[in-house]
Image (cartoon, rainbow, N blue to C red):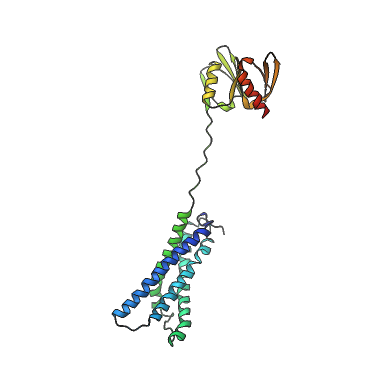
Length: 281
């Protein structure tokens, strides 16, 4: 059976939770012992203090030992058991907890009473009244321990990772006739001016947009895209440049990975230098 996510990687958590349970059991032991001592004194009932300590220690130490088994039991629960099965597991766990607590406590007392007090421990486990008396107390102890373990798990559980969000790709609005085409800025391979229009080339499409090359250059810069002007009539995406070939007098030809060759002018020397650096990486 698979371990539920809520109980995975909890070894460190379990140590702290068991420490908290040990503190709780110790406090309960001290309260129970001194309450019984006080009751015996007020009611003038003779009962050796050692006997009271043995009665309470046998019960509380058994509870602490059973609490140490909780991590192993919880780690073997099936994944997402559902409400009905969760209640069934909880009921089964309580039945085992109560049965073991009462039986082991009785066994310890049966063994230690004769040598310490010269008489057997008197308790009839066949009497239903004994179980009806003990079960409510065991139910309370079982629920408290279970809640402590669950609370410790919830406190120690790391916050869920932030959901992955798809990176937003800035888009450029290109008006072509009566239609406005939205193209991701990074998809534009290159563009060139054509009178009052700009031819925009993206993978598998070419758009004749009514705008100037300067307007397109400005929008691409605002989108943070890696485009540069290489000629008064042309701009390119640096990521698609594969070669820069001099043609004389400072001009170049820029080859793109689409196979297209566009002119590069010495007037755009700084941008051409960026092209050279890009292709040399």
